[in-house]
Image (cartoon, rainbow, N blue to C red; front, side, top):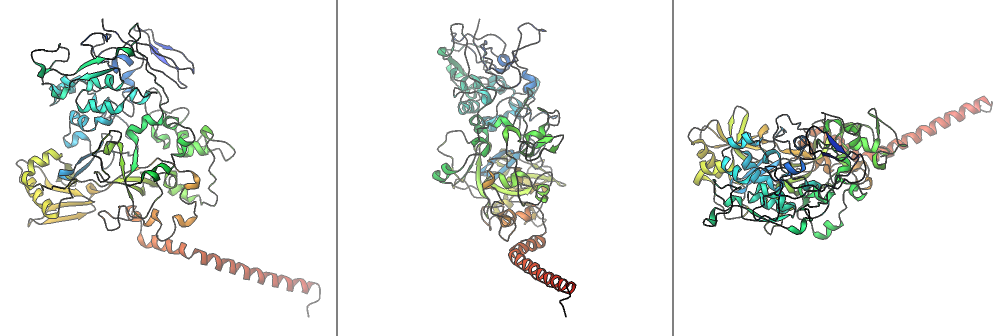
Length: 621
């Protein structure tokens, strides 16, 4: 019999629970604040206990192992895993997956959550298998990596799914308290198509020999190695037996309150071109500096619906810990009781200070979010370039990563959110080839463009290649238009423009098409303290000609592509904006004039009052 062990350290206010061995006996509960140390047997994907001493010992299955104590299917509906589900709540637009291909000039925002401006992977012809190979490096498992058996059997890559197995939810990605779990190693296993082996190898329980991507389509993971045909061998594990106790059990050091470092693997953002010394001097998020962890605000119950920090709309299907509103900026710092602020004498959650905002007109809170002043980097007149873990593979060791690697992500951008309020954002301009039918554009995958365009695609030796010229765009559009059975008109999207061929074969450029709009998402971190927020220098931080929040450029240079100014990006009237800025420029003069008027009026009143007093006393002639 194959035997082994998994352990999970469960912390927090909710009770640690473990299902009993016999069905129908309910859940075992500790109802204690103390960590519950699990010493449980590891189970393979067929539910059999693992014996690590066997030469052909299989990898452990998180579904079968963790699922013996925790409701795996319920957890699989959580925020990090439910993207492909049609009934999943999308919430506020977040960072998309960016499908990037420099050779075809493609930067395509993808999301299965229905966010405006992002395309569902299946809508552009990207299968679940292809999605995992491109983005599985930063997927925690489940979702696209774990389609049900029927979908795997019906997929074009059904044979490869049989070889690699499903990419199950790896609980240790978030809940590992120690460095035994290596998410970068897990990413390497996903790249090798070792999906079913990834969790075991990342946990440091074993090393793997072989790669599923090199195994033939008819390779059977359950079959013993074929010594006569080593070329047909797939992955095999060599377990670290020192990790197992005499009863062949393993102890994992896990926590329900993951440190920020676990989150950073998928959620790191770095500004490019910043000297190391300046980066070291940069302050951390004020909440992390105060000792909070990410999960103190981004909480979830057993269903793993993470609260995203913008009030009750974060998870409308249920209320968390007495109300999601308490886990927003306002809820934590202002305090809430029935939706009303508690006042400056009542500390917020975790003792959060009550913001005074002395002299700030209340209109600002109706027109702007807290993050507009407190989140992200201090703004300059031009937006700066950033790289993220999801878009640029941060967290994976590389000698090839450069500051110029696409996609180009700009911040801080001061645009309007879905609620109409100004907020700090990041932005990327989409770039892709597609088919236009009416007002709807269906993007083409880069491999499809390469196949249809052929020699029309520019061959550029530079790396990364520059954007295609107008002549090159026209040539590729003509090649795409000649493709047999093509539906719709061939178009190209780049820098907020739509390119198409006119009736005479010339290139026609259209500005303002909805399909060419920039994709923007809110910046929540890093949060700056009050002493470093916009407005600390007075009204002129925002209300003066040249203030970045109004007149800054949504580009790395004023003359660059897509160099809209912030007020143009928000659709504001330039005459009103400039008049308002000019008014603030003359504000000191108005103040002097107003004080002078008050002084003159005071003298006139004093003079009149003195005359009246003298008249009453009979001393005035």
